[in-house]
Image (cartoon, rainbow, N blue to C red; front, side, top):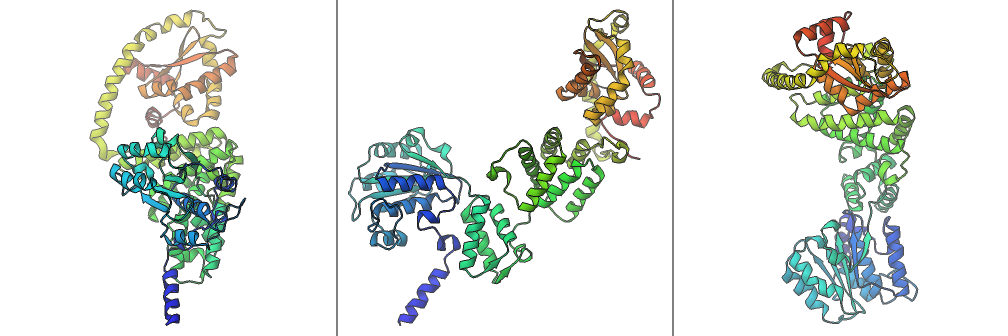
Length: 549
């Protein structure tokens, strides 16, 4: 009969979820959160306790677990003076572990949101002295779920509780807690658990379960758990439930979600080398393999962000290095090979193009356009020309867009009419700066080559336009289309052009785009400025495209 009872108890124990089975029972077992453990232990040892505590932080970071350990330590019968850890053996500790302590009241505010629940469970109970122990302790989980009236009812008791009462409020959303409640609590912020601490915890559990799990698998679990110990333990439990004694990455891949991190870094390596064709091929290969392209784009953005942080010298491991060591080394190598400006440019383009994916008629099209924008080999531009993708199926939409563009062009032409009429006068007048329009025209090719070094796309559409006039220190650049005028006025492009002219003439100059007034002006301008360019080249540049051969 005794053997039967023992067997029954063991089976119940083995059926517990890992996060319950290996829940910390003393402060030293808690993963991370060292600043909180030190403070709470010091308060217990010195007896300088607060009457109310607020534990906030992400899920699975140990808030409720810490609250229970704190409660055990306060009422532990065997704890000596200047000690802080509960013994877990005395009657008081065992009652809390078994969940039948009369002096520890736990309430889930998510299911007890009303004022009546607060009055009955907290306010009413707090009036009575502890049944057996020194302190009566209230743990309120997800306290942010209480209603405003419930918070107001709690406020007075929280402000002036009896000397034997201790409140511990836990929340994942501290911004929803009224300031009147926060101001009456000692606030402790729990952070995400670091990868190294998480791996150590998982390794200990797997050893106790007598399962051999590869270090790479533990690292992958730690990364994917996003700092939540409970999530990490749940993932490990799924792997252990496969019944294997030795778990490698191959077996773990059946359970663990697929990660695009390695592919994202490979993609970044290709675009960092301005290799547009390989990057687009790689993107389409991944699409054929069945990956979620939108999720992949988010992984690329995440890796570019880490690359940006590394490049700027950020050392916060929890921000930068929540990836495996191999990918970390690849990113560190990329920081030496890429400039800060190019990283920022790639990040801005990827964020913009990723947001366009869900409304695109072709899923990968925005990312392909983004690749072409990011790349543009400065050494061999001919090798990286990509065929512009046309949308014949969207003809009606293009007609509407063209109509809107024509109306906009008329308005722009009206604004620029006076400037165009002054063109001949400007050529004859001397400028207020130390250079003339003739000198600007002479240096135009030199300026284009310098612009090309900064921005290949800007060079592409400027090479078919030329300076027309000089008003004061403003250089007027003639453009055939409103699209080009808008591009020139964009702050990042305008800054590049003005910097180049300032470097050439050693004087600050301002640039502006001036659009041709009618089709005759347009044809004349194209004929003069593009004697060696084909009509296809002109059309491509007009709409920001690139022709492939």
